[in-house]
Each structure stands twice: as structure tokens, then as C-alpha cells.
Length: 414
Image 1 (cartoon, rainbow, N blue to C red):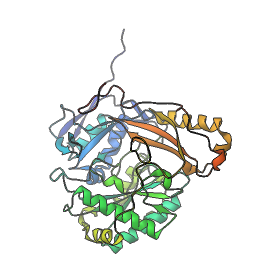
Image 2 (cartoon, rainbow, N blue to C red):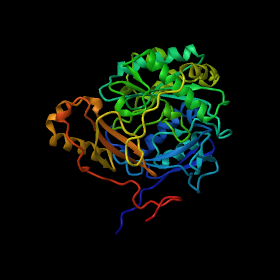
Image 3 (tube, rainbow, N blue to C red):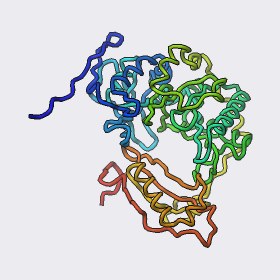
Image 4 (tube, one colour):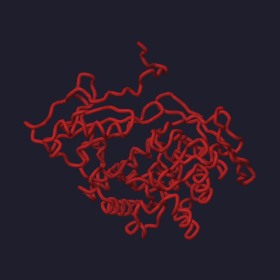
């Protein structure tokens, strides 16, 4: 006899019925949180979560196989969406488009979680104006070897730069190792101008905090610094919004903070188990963000003063791809991060002398966006290994092809 299918549970949320399938399915084994627990978390913080996500088209990042498996990214909203979930069609520079989900209320939050989404990934635009962002996103991304105090120091440099150009930054933990600073702006500039403003801010932060912060786009050139990731403001990018749950074993949450908390609190303090009580006690520290709308005029003037950013050389290989200024070798391309980490460890075992001379930031494991999910590229920067001792480029330990079997217009098939 076949086992019975898991039963669902119907929730009444603001006049809408939302069915939660497999409500007792364990999503986070370590704290013992079920799918229904995740839904209830979002309902408890719904006003804060909606402040960051409501009315914005979003990519659905679905963890249908659990947090220890790679998520897949679904841009197109399911056809059988309920009537309380809207949609908006985004058009991209490469000629593609996607009709993405737009939620407005707590019922929409519950519906998204039921699809297997943990974090919310909205675009920095409103559905009513898809071409003009109303949010500048500053992502402080630490390189390996960087501690939290260095991230905090860079955050306060960011605040100083924002103050100087008349903008207000609202900090939150990323829910992983970094820190996000959100800035509400008038929707008067296109994506190209917003990205230029973000890059200008990153360059100015690097100028004021050399060695602590970097605006260098190429990872191998950053060293042990905090990367001010301006490219998160590109049209096709999204970041986890406020109160998003991240796929870490402790169910960590991307949590808004007051500036006077940034130096004293730590990201690991904010989880699904702790944030609802904090929210009930103090409310949302980002409560006033929509009343602090600013202009990019100051950053764009600074862009003119700084002049064009230095571009890295691109020539040097037979196919015209960028030639790095660093002595890089590629180790592997893998489908999952554990496979990538294992390949790096295998390479280090095979080359113990070189491995012993690597700095933390020399080990480059990068998540790369594939057609619908991440894949991983593993490289090693040999800059700290004397040239005569550097291992050569060898056959990849793993060579996963994320595009195998994929067909789309304009791609050669044979």
C-alpha cells in the first residue's frame, strides 16, 4: 500500500485563504523549524517584510529540495497564482523578458513561502515604474579573512559618504556574513545612472578607507577587504530584502538595525527564533525609510569629479576574454558548493607547499548564475607563492557544464 500524501493546512490571512502544503515538513533541522513555522515567522514580521518587498517584482528562489541543496531561480510567476498575487513584466538588455510575481500583502508572503522560497528577492523598482529604481542598494561583501569589525568600520565610512551627498542609509544584516545599506531615492534615474551612482560611492569609500574597502570588480584583486558591491544595482540583480530568512543551518534572518546597534550586535543573533520577539518589542528599525527619499545629484556630481573608473585590461587570450593581472589557475567547475569545497581541498592536498602559502582571500570559490540555478567555479590566486614554486594550470578536477542540454534562441546547437 502506498504511503498517504502529506496533508495541507488552510490559513485565513486578511480575508484570503492560503493553502500550505506539507506544513510539518522540516525545513531547518538544527532548530527543528517546519514549513508552517516559516510561514508563521513571516506573518509575525509581515509589515516589516512587506516594507521591503511589497509592490516590487521579485525572483522566486525556491528551495524545493531543502536548504542543503541548491535553490533554483524562477523568474516567471506560476500561471495558477491566486488573484491576490499580481505580476509585472521586466524587459532585459539582452532581449529577454519575464513576467514576475508582485505581492502586496501577508497572504502573498505565505503563498511565496509555500512555493519553497525562504528569502525574498525583489527588484529595486516598483511595479508601477519598472525603469526607474527607487532604491540604491549597498552590499558590503567581505572577502575571506575579513572579520565583522572591519565590515562595521566600512559601514560607517559608507554612512559618512552618504551624509556628504545628502542621502540616508538604513543598515541591515545580509543574513550571511555581510551587511546591506539601503537608500530610498526618487524614481528619476534609470538603471545605468543608479549603477554609476553606486559605483561612485564604492570608489569614494575605497578612497577614504584604503585597505579596508575595495571597489575592484575582479575578485582576485580585492585582497582581504570589504567589497562594496555596486553591481547589485544592475537591472538583472536582486538581493535578499529585509526580514528574509537565509538558507543557513541556524535559520538566520536579514535584519534591519539602528545605526547605534551596528557596532554591538552580531548577525548570528538574528534568527527565525529571535527576530519575531525583537520585532514585537521594538518594531521595525526601518519604519521611516519611505519618508527619507533622496536624490542622486550629489553622487552623480562626484562621479564627474572622480572621472571614469579604471577598467581592467581585456585583451590577452585567443578568444578575447579578459586577462587577469594575477597569477590565477582554475581548479574546478562544480554543480554544488560542497563539491567545490571538496575540489579545492583535493587540490591543496596535491600541492601542499603552495597551499601552505595561500592567504584566505587567495582561495576563490565563486557562485555563478546558471540558467536557473547557481554553479561554482574554483580558482586559486598564486600571488603569495614564489613564481618558481607555482603549480601550473592542470586539467580541471571537475568540469561541470551548467549549460549542457540547454537551448535558447541564438545559441549554437551543433
